[in-house]
Image 1 (cartoon, rainbow, N blue to C red):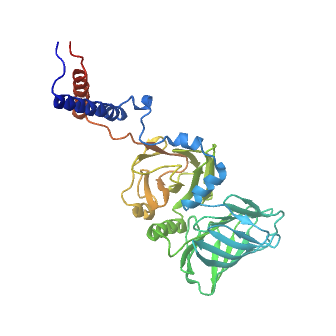
Image 2 (image 1 turned 45 degrees about the horizontal axis):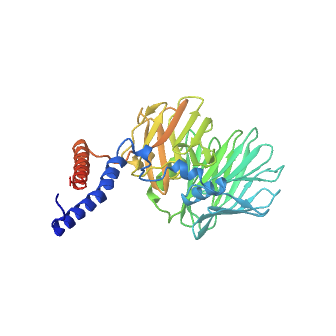
Image 3 (image 1 turned 90 degrees about the vertical axis):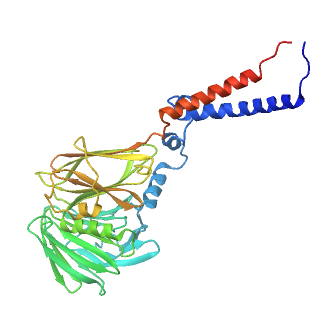
Length: 413
């Protein structure tokens, strides 16, 4: 029977065995986290977003509005009976008097006036305004005025069976006032610069008359007027100005800003700039949105789709799929080219992603008469290991396990 032995050799063996046992779980973890067994064993690179949302303790609507504000999409209005205000728009409105006064565009800490007053001839509201989310709506029996609390200070006026005149008085310092006319929709448009902000105004069927800084819009029955502006100091001003030009020329058919709510449903701020464009249906959830549009006859146009990054992630860990009528469409290399493209310049749908603090897509649709648009954000799988590397890891784990077994084997006495 052999007893004892070299103490240094025993120390060396003990140290080697301890190192082997330390490396063993590391090797198993590395092999597991990139394998199909990862989900079963609980190894994940990041928490599942769905799980995080289900544990959200905030009020879902407030949290969704906060994401909309942080992404520069829209925010809720408030109205105290005199002043309507939000993070992006502010104006005076006295219930029952009709005119909108001091229409301000708010850009962070900067507030600049766009229009001194906006009045509709014969407008007599029959009820207090409805302030819901990002919209302020006031109406009489034949005309509706909608203000949107969003970064371009969008204002819409629609008539029904009666023609109406709308008088807009711009500040005395307003420059670059220029009226354009067209034989197609919109029939008239106005470009202007007010307080360093570039703006556009469109009238669908009627006309525009300019007298100094006073503009008279003659709206026909079933007509439409819309005004919006881009802050001169805003980020990505070139793309925003191109989008403004697309709006002014009628190439922009509609826009939808969409924010999913963690408890289900979504918040929406939308506008349709073609007279016969109808939103048949839409469905929004985290990572997916589907919209179905229809027009009376074939016509092309641009559709702006904007999401906060949580609703539609578009980072390096996700891939966007954009589909029109069930067919995946390619991404245009140059967003500006898409915004400035002439009507009918291509028969194929494309999309471009704009450089903004949100997932903002401009989709060109060659035929809006029956168009289904779908956007999906697909999470990319974590980077895996190639075959040789996986075999090397398996072999290393096997050798470590064998070495540990040999060193801990009991010697016969």
